[in-house]
Length: 258
Image (cartoon, rainbow, N blue to C red; front, side, top):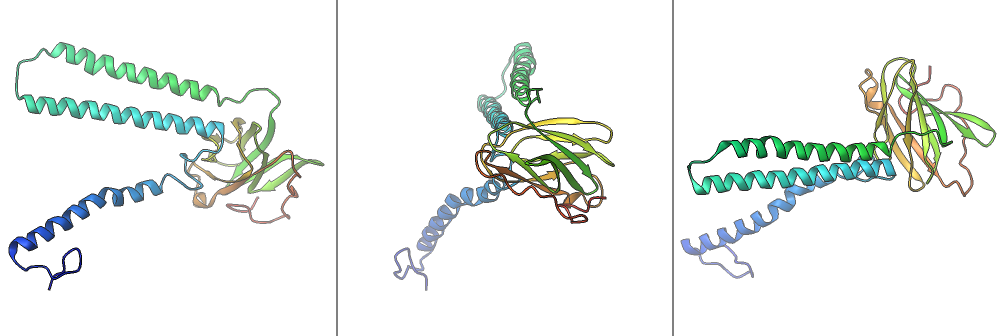
């Protein structure tokens, strides 16, 4: 026996079964988009999400991403609308030259020019400057990170943990002992390569105290996946964290310092 929506026995007539089936399909179709969005939205959060920025550089990157997504959505709607109009109107004589010039050349060039200009404006604000900012030395190796940062009694070396003050710009001076690596803290900013024999300077800033996950974003060998580190952001107006270096031979986030 079948039950209807309020628990009463439902008629087994073909029409009644069809009605119940229709209501069931309507319910399923109504919930399907929400269910499909769950796994997509789940990727927009977390320690390695670029869409949960915690600093000016990461905020600029996230803004650029949203602008590109919005622009791509509008262009998609425009193209689909033109396709729908063409299919609805059917075959007809038209002049190809205006469509080729304006739709095929002028419109893409205008969109790309605006996008490049906006990206350059965002990127220029991330460039490191000689303004006396807090500086940290970062040396990558297979497969870990070694940091040297200012401490209360002089420079302190730590393995796999970087300490920086909140609400202050700081520069990461990057180099490598062996192969090319890439320094990346997704919630604080973009990537920067660590190259043997070269010093690259990466400007970052954290908006608030907390702990942020970092990783190597350049494949560098068998231990690449475990080449992680942590950025501890402390309040400069409060007590300083314990910057005591790790004991000799302690394991870092991704390996042991050679």
